[in-house]
Amino acid sequence: MASAPDPRNSLHIARQAILDGHLRVCGYELLYRARQDDEACSTGERLASARVLTDAVLGIGLGALTGGLPAFIKFSRELLLLDVASLLPAESFVLELSPDVGGDAEVVSICRELRGRGYNLALDRYTVNSEAEALVPYAKYVKLDIRNTPVDIWQAAAHQLNHSSMQVIATQVETVDAATRARDAGCSMFQGYYYCRPATLSTKALPARRLAYLNLFAAINRPDLTFDQLEDLVKRDVSLTVQVLRSINSAAFPLRQRIASVRHALQLLGMQQIRKWASVWAIAGLNGGGAAEVVSVALLRARTCEILGNATSTQDAGPKLFLLGMCSLLDTILDQPMDKAIADIPLAPDIRHALLGGSNGLRKILDAVIAHEQGDWTSAGHTLQGLGMQPALLPEAYTEALCWARDIASSAVAA
Image (cartoon, rainbow, N blue to C red; front, side):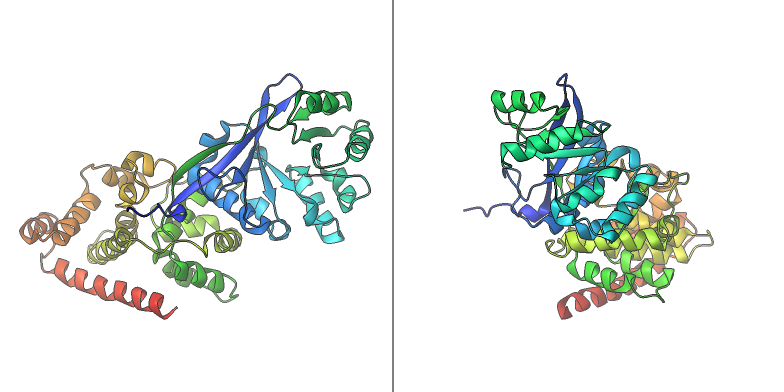
């Protein structure tokens, strides 16, 4: 009997529409799902918040999930205090705060600052005389759970908020009677099974190395961490590398440059942004599955390409070739055509051209390395000779790369 697919190898995000009084969709709440057929989330709020953030933004992609409408994403207290919101473009998100976030001075201060920076906040399961009242001045939306909250309590909250400029969202609307009561109470937006059930979108996940996440999480908080050390940590793992690249497109500032190396991507993000993303990745990824063999091949290929690139006279060839080798199996890892696999990664034009099969110096070195992997040493040697390089460099580079990959594997076993 074939074994069931490992749910950790896929990403699943459910989305549920939020409608206005004319039943027009004006946003989507994004919800974490462990499996495609799950109808609810059984994961704790802390992990679920982090997984929605990483899986929606860096995995499936907001364009596919929301079509440009605002994405309502639940934020745990931890993510709020880490200022993870600053990683997101304010115009694309609504930060949804549950009652568990609290309303103490620290939370109030962060919410005030976020509102001042243009972020929209929603208070989930709001009730009168709760801690969340302290956050009302900074919220644009208030969500009232009309199924699980006593009628007199949620209606009192609706009547109180009707005198403000707040958008009041009735949630858990499951019947026509509930919809009518919510309208009569003054709710201006609606969400629930009466209108539509959550629909789940899925994609294949990048394999994650537990050790790489642990090392990154531990190292990122060292005040003396250098970019060289950070680059070394990220380059050890395919999924970390791609997360870094995708994070640039998701940052609150616009990207105006193409990426030529992992180090280039890290420098563009900046240490402060990387620290925040690393915290999210650690929460979401520590329980990820083990690395597949194809990932080990990508690491070995990347390091071999980098060594050959360092032996050329072309500036920055080594870092570019490492990135090329690391991405060269993304189509296999993601089970997608290469053009789709790299569509949302802002790669330098020559790297993108090489990945899509174009002929340039980078591609020729990658082809030589692939030929060597497959035992076609004659073809590999001829390719290098055509680039003015000694064929003997390739087996030497491959052997050195094997030692590097073996060190990483040994560290993983020790962990």
